[in-house]
Length: 589
Ligand code: ADP
Ligand code: MG
Image 1: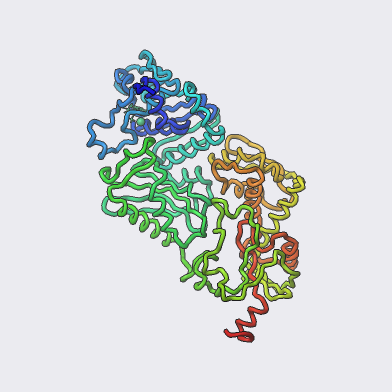
Image 2: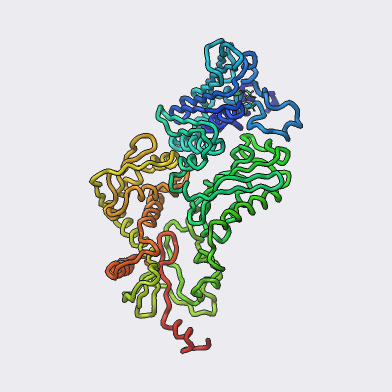
């Protein structure tokens, strides 16, 4: 092999690869340029998930006609002069690469006008070839059109995900920028349908409602904290509001959306012991630090940063979020909210000898990333070796109902002792098995709603749901798109007929994972598990004797009655033998 210098064309496509990975990265660069230009309004139009067209219009400062050609050249920037400036960066861009990169892998047209000029100028770049400057009429500001992204790099094109996924990335990006810049008006239209609009009136909580829905937005807690030039503001979720992944932990550092930051672990640490294992908070946090404290030039897409003093930032975040959390969260004395937590501090002591044993083979999805529990309880609640091991029969015996306690547990007697049943977990199990049994026979009875329910979802959730409509159809949900972010629920599984359709729909999207594409069966089981969880009776719900008995009967009929579909135990068994030992009637105490 001979060593050769790459042609400028190839070199620039390689460089572009680092900046422009997918349509959302183009949107990101163009929106950042608009914000750097001081725009008060940013309008984004997308066609075919950004493959056909990405158009970003702003009313910022614009670009002088005689600098337009320079703007689309590589390493041409107005934001940086010397290398020292890198540590004084207050703009989002600084490398002068974005327009050049985008122009080398698309057909780009940029039109701009500055206030002082009577007319604007337009320039076309195609596959890196810069055309002639034209004089055109234009409003003050900048308009960039990016057509046929990756038309000359077919390999890139192949790496793009389904349209719904690419659109979701764009939605997520724009809603986050809207949240970070509440004084800027944002508008996003996809295929001529408006999918996001903010007013620019500085009301972050109303933007939060666009992002997460009104309910969630209302519950989010405020964070405001300042120490030695470091400032943290924004929102964090209360402990009762969680997700099954870290994706909703959003961080902005000096106005820049930064993913993959150690600050995420600072937030998680603030929630430590307050959340169940495998559950994560939602946050939208904005950190302001003096520019000299942070190096933003460490990642090609500027999605990561490095701090001069990481420990200091880490502990500042940890303290600030923990304080905000505790201000709103009365923590029960010495008690964790997690059954698998330290057993000694439970109000009722969980003796290791008690029959807290898992069925083998279930749950089907318990070990999946994002499942809400560890596959094995920590050793503190595992039966110890000296304790009497109670074999766990897969089935439960016929139970005699004694009653309900705390509107949460059923108490029942079996031939071999006492059973405490968690009504929510038990009902989840019952619903899940019924649904999966019907599904196995390909016969989930579906019941049409008399009046179809229309449900509005936040754009990102809407994209997720769109991709899952077929799975849901198999499960007995008949749901149709109804406008850009709305859906019409026309039928539900008969099993859930008495439930609120909108609650069911929100339950479905709440925990959808991005790019969820395992085996079809597995998705269906997971979706089913999720719906059942939402539809099951809750702790704190008083049940009639009839309902209690029906629940026990249904549970007895289950194949795996001892765990809920997520792997939590449905019951605790106190065997006669164990009771006798505990009361000192038998053996050494
Ligand atoms: P960078 O943002 O890193 O400087 P870009 O390639 O994104 O590099 O942009 C190059 C230059 O073009 C910018 O420095 C800026 O001067 C100008 N520019 C780009 N987009 C806009 C815009 N929307 N409004 C005003 N100026 C812009
Ligand atoms: Mg830029």
